[in-house]
Image (tube, rainbow, N blue to C red; front, side, top):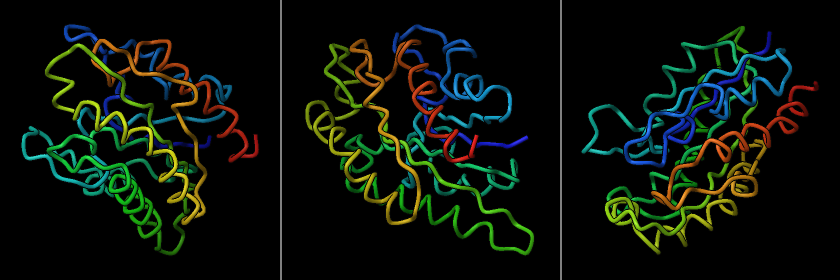
Length: 215
């Protein structure tokens, strides 16, 4: 059976936009929907952590949110892998991190370098890469989340991410998918997705992944 690693943040974890809401049910998380859409021929391993960045430290976190530092451990944990899907960058837009879409794309480039440089031993299987640009941030009346993510400036930057990510993916021969074309953040907190939009990402990825795997 082929294996995919879905590497992301709270959008991959299935975070609820309601402040008191529970994590989305397993069947509503996009990696689950992707696996189901592939007809049982592929295992999709979800590795989503709330607050995870592409490659930057967050000193306020109780766990390591630097995506570049943790990724090698997960590559070894789950190998052999056929595809690594990376959907990160929304947290990079926080003013406390760096707040720029282009810098997030440099973090994505770093992650691709990590994958490419990891599988170099004899017998290693080099997985294919699929870079996913996350849905745009949207205006919210949730005061803390709006400020935490940078308000209007962050929303504007989030709309630039797909262009930069597409460029970075092309540099490394990776496939690209713009999740903003199929999913929209919930205004309840301006960042996270309701179950329907979370599922939409998985559904949207099915034909892309099928093509990559020759299914």
